[in-house]
Image 1 (tube, rainbow, N blue to C red):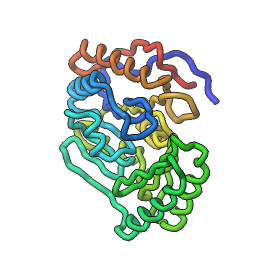
Image 2 (cartoon, rainbow, N blue to C red):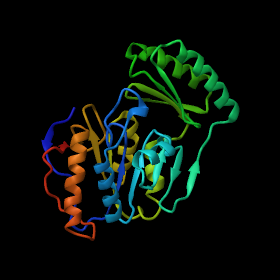
Image 3 (tube, one colour):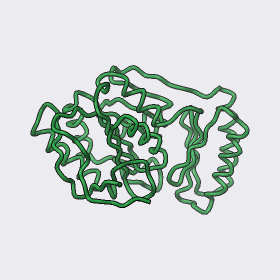
Image 4 (cartoon, rainbow, N blue to C red):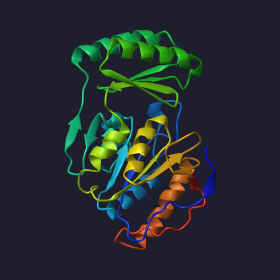
Length: 269
């Protein structure tokens, strides 16, 4: 689809940037169970430093609930978009949450619980306003899980289906990482900055589209077709990119970033 050339992102010395990070598969290596995921302490320190250098213009954008995001990056307290943006905490610590109607949430919990129990080694994750159907330990159930999710969307029109890596999620319609990034970018300290978003999954593509529309920098982690203009091969490369970015920012406390090459980052043409 695209030819890859080694290149650095077009960060300018006079630029003011806002950083958005996905978590699973980007800041944290994928594990067989969601509760086994962790972010190394050194990476948390780097995020803290990057947040300070950008006056707090750094947010996590994830399918995880905000409570889990806070636990993963503790003791940091960052702006967040959890459950793909169904819940958000902005730079002023204001929190917004969408929710499913109570009767829909109760019915879904019961129906999904019964169905997933019949597929050994699958896992139902309840997020309050969304449900995640995991099959990483039972990939032979992929089509069954997808069919179950599609049936729930047909039965409950308020839902939207969001596929991911060995997971299918059911969330309120209109919720996406793209919409979350767009909302966060309207507020201080993000407003007026050039957004940079790094993510690895299908769920991040909506975010990449919004970033592109803002003339920002979208970076895909791993293989596969993408709307992102740049690519890092894996989580280790994200860590290296983060370190190199901090080295540049530390040399210029006005948060300028010189456009020097990162060997592991490749640009799409």
